[in-house]
Length: 267
Length: 311
Image (cartoon, rainbow over all chains, first blue to last red; front, side):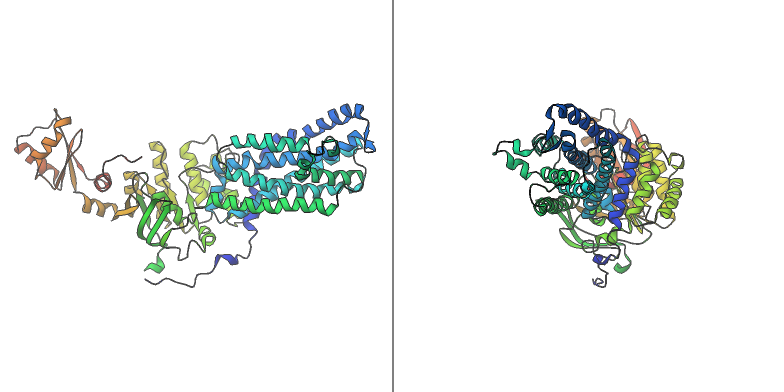
C-alpha cells in the first residue's frame, strides 16, 4: 500500500498565537464571572494589612531606613499580594483543570498544544496581577505611600515576578496527583517566602545564616526593586542582578511547566 | 481507496510499558460512515480513539487520519475533528452558551461566528432555553448533549464519540441517539465506541468487535449477526434448571447450530426457532418457559468475547 507524502506540515501555521489568545479568552470569561470572589483577597485584604500593620504597628516602629513605616511596607505588601495571587491561581485551579474540570483535556482535543495552555495561563495571570496592582497603587497614593513617579515601575516588576512564580508553581501543580501536596508548598515555601523576604522588616535584621533564604526567594528581589521604585532610591543590589535572577526563575519555570503539561496531556 | 479513507490503520499498536492496549489492528473508515468500536471494558477501544484523536502516539504500525500523519500533523488534524470524550469536561463556571463560544475560539472561529454557531447548535441539541444558565444544574443527558454540540462547533469532518450514552437514563439515551442519527443523516462521519449492543445496532453502519486489544470481527450489525450467530435464538428455562442445564444441553445436542448452557437457561441458536422448539418437545423435554427471539449483536458479542466478566 502506498501512502501520500505530499502532506503539508503542521509547523507552518500562519497564526501560531491564535490558540494562546483563545486560552486567555477562556480565563477572562471565567474571571468576568468570578471576579467578585477575588476582590477581598487581592484588594481589600492587602489594604487591611496596610492599615493595621502600617499604621498600627508603624506607630511603634516610627521610621525605618529614613521613611515612615507605612511607606516602607507599601512595596512589601504590594509584592506579597502579587505573590499570593500567583500562587493561589496556579495551584488548585491548575490541578483542577487537569483532574476535576478536565478543561485542559478539552483544549488538547482541539488544536491547542500544551505549551499554548501554559503561555495562555501565564499571560492571563500577568493581566490579573496587573489589575490588582493598579487598584492597590491608586488606593495607596491617597495614603501618601508613594514617594516617586518610579512607583509605576512596580507594574513591570510585578509582571516579572508573576512569570517567576506562576511558571514553577504551575509546573508543580501539573506534576502532582493529589492536592495535599499544596499544603507542603504553602507551609514550606509560600509562608517562609512571605515572612522572610523583606516584606515587613529588612532582611538585614535576620541572622546572617538565614539571609540566603531571603536572597534565594524571588519575592525578596521583587520587594527590593519595588521598594526602590516607590521610595525613589537605588536597590540594595545592582538592578541587573535582581532582574536577572527573576528572569532565571521565569525561564526555568516556563520550560518546566511546558514539559509538565506535555507529559500530562500526551501518552 | 485508502486515499479517500478518513481513518486508515495498519498494524496499529499501543503499549503502556509491558501492557499492550491495542495489539495490531487494521481498519478503514470511509466518509459519511457511522463506524463503531464494540467491546468489553479494557478491549482497547478508548486507546484506539485517543490515537485517532491525535492525543496519544502510536507505539507501532501505520495510522493516517484525514490523509495526514497524526504525529507530525496532529494540530492540523485536530482542527478538523470533533471529540466527545467519555468523561464530560465542560467548564462548570461558564454558561451553557459560553462553553460553546469559548471552545469555538480554540479553533480560530471568529467571535460573531462562534455566537451564531452556538445558538444554532443549542437549538439542535434542544438546550436553547438553557443557553444563559450554568452547566452544573444540567442533567447527565443535557451535559452529554452539550458536549456533543461542543464537538460540532468547528464543523468537523469526523466526530469521535467515546461511549456517548454511558451512564444516561433510557429517555436521555434515546434523545442522544436521535440527535446522533440526525448528524449521520447530514453526512457527518461518526466514529463511536460503545459496549451497548442496542447503541451499536441503532447507530453503526459498520463496526468492529474488539477484545484484548485485537479486532475479532468486523462488518455491519446485520452481517455480524449472520456470520457469528443464527437468525433466531431459543431461550429455554427448565424448572429444575441451575445445576442440570449442562445435562439438558447434552440432550438438546444437534438441535439448531449451537447449544449454549448458561447457569439460568439454555440457549439454542437456530435459524428457525419454532422448528427447534418442536424438536425439543419431540425429544420429550418440557421446559418451564420457552422464548423465541431474533438474534442480536449481544449474542455475537458474547460469542466472540466470552462470558467472563472483565473489570
